[in-house]
Length: 529
Image (cartoon, rainbow, N blue to C red):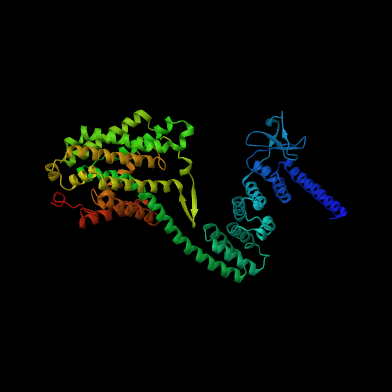
């Protein structure tokens, strides 16, 4: 490279830098008017400069952190750490009070323009996630000013997912532009059809309503029909996921009831309060632990909730229920009274207001999978339900306690004749069922309000699950929870939540007329007698 060429390049760079600096100054000057129209012009002009500090300035404007001094012609922005930065020079100001400046006014229209401008600026970010988010922002804003930036980035994009997001953003702009050729608009409709979500459908509906081009209108009608059919199946799958989530909650709430009801034949109306105690145990654990251990609170809360509910369950069995065996009506009334006592005791200790339980970071948020919205917390509850079910199966099948409990369930008199202490089995079975209900309370504390009435919303559904699946049969409880949970979520969008529950209740009544022992009836001489 010759010296003359090097000098020419340096001169060109200096001129370009000076021109960009002048453009930034002109864009910032528009903010000094503090009028919505001038501010919008400043947003677009600043985004067009591509200045390195433009995203920070625009973010500050959107968060009401951009400050001006119209008299001194100074523009600063306040960082999240309350530092003041000169928007023109990037220097940190010291000894200056933010109260001496005036905030630049922002409305909803400006916020949309800011989001589009930031999106266009971050299209060239080295982070693929930021580029994808920027493309999504442009898709929603449909800012025609970002078309050049989209084309430039699309020509050099190497990430397939980001490239598709860029094509979709470009299609959202092109498809509504009547100056674009018919072929390009039809291709844009095809791109939006491949996206296949609600936003794409709304955009294609708009195209079909406004376009006078027959080819574009036909393509829009075909794409609209395809997207609607896709969304119908997507909604069905989404409701299936919701149903599985609801079934996992029902399984956790009902599986402990299946144990106590199956072994002792006790209609325990206080079972919901065991769930409630588990939720309050979670609240107490989180309150007692220091904030730095919040992420591990559930690991402590699970055994604590199990023990608390199990101990209360033993007390109920020893003090009340063991005197009422063989008298189902009296047991029902007694346990209902116990449930009222427990509710009032919790109200006296913690108050009647709802208590907040914070979900750990790993249970917060959601993610998209093939167009389906999956909540992380619900996913962990499904995993917990599977873990609890597997642990109970192992305990009942592979331990001497499980063998004795199954013997008492199938033939109490024969088990007693063989030397099994049925009273002790009853006590430990009730403790096990109550403890599992406490674990259910830990799970419910993450998705429901922790209040004295928490368990009341699940006790009826729990009995329905147990009756449908078969008393004392864990596999029946699992299947019953799946049937009720999934069916309820599939019926809700069609006939509503209330009518859906009524229809399921009628179905269960008719079903137990034909199969009084449920889907999986227990076998044994005493049971079959």
